[in-house]
Length: 447
Image 1 (cartoon, rainbow, N blue to C red):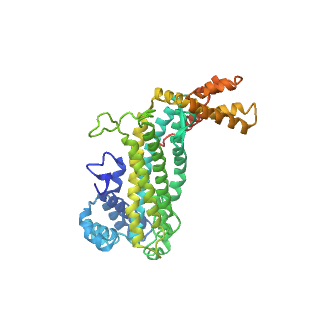
Image 2 (cartoon, rainbow, N blue to C red):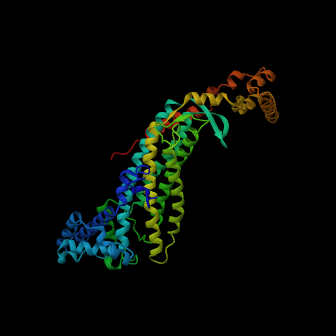
Image 3 (cartoon, helix red, strand yellow):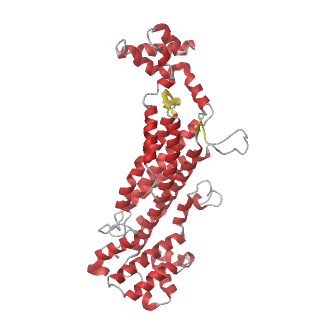
């Protein structure tokens, strides 16, 4: 088994995070950190903290130099953080010691790494959001097209009452509408810059520290938190929690699809499924299984990541390292889930004959609730429930449809309407159309 399925040559296609995978490579991290170092120097030059000529040289070099991650490995393993090796390599690559001496002026490793991390998380959110919008578009089409298509609703794995396939599709998509609505506030609160120096006091930056932090935020297109957040991992935790909740919502889709294609149900088709090595008749629900596995992984990693939110004093290596181990897996898992779900939803379709057959099975007892409420118009509700329960027992014992028994005992009831699935879906069609309208109104932002 590969150490990470997301960049595995063998398993990468199964758990593909798409373009988000590029954001958590060594080269991407180095490039992001150089971007922060270059922006920091530019802002410091504008505020007279370092010479403007040096600031320009550093800013330009940060966009041009290429640094080999392998060359930084030994120093990183010794220091426990990559930034000292990065700064040394950057200064050497500049070949201008008179300017290079001002690289990383007054900052600390965590300032650079946290700011670079936020830059990459920002781009990951863009990619995941795009896939969620594609998924919503597909689900809106299913919900609207099949708003009036009856199928069994199931509770505890058993037939409950009729619903519509459109409403089921709406149930898969509704959580995403809420999650996407959270994104603007999440971006404003959590996509923030870090510039607080060695122990969070910004002592080496002097009285201009707040202005430098605000300038760096503007240069990077991030928000200024107005404070030190080295040991307050709330921004990272909130972003991770959002990602995990996306994964869980998509895992619900995977769980339902796995159930709905199983032998004996077969009420949907996936538009493509995996084969067995020995059983040629099988078409396995691979994509739904991927979604469920990724949801389970993300949920487990959230717990581990939470344990990193109690660092000791002003920096804690073990807590920080825990974040490094967990967070990329959460991001890439969510990216892989979003991409998988978007593709899955584009090929989903109902198997209408199987849905109709399921509604007709079970001796019509899926309509027992509707029958009891109709009878409650003629007698007290407890008596009506008891009467229908007796009929259900008789139906099972005699293998007689409940509708026939109801017509026999209660000829005044409109059993034709009561036992018509299309007339017993309640608000399901309206729910499906409401969702479709809301999903279409939730337009994807411009790239």
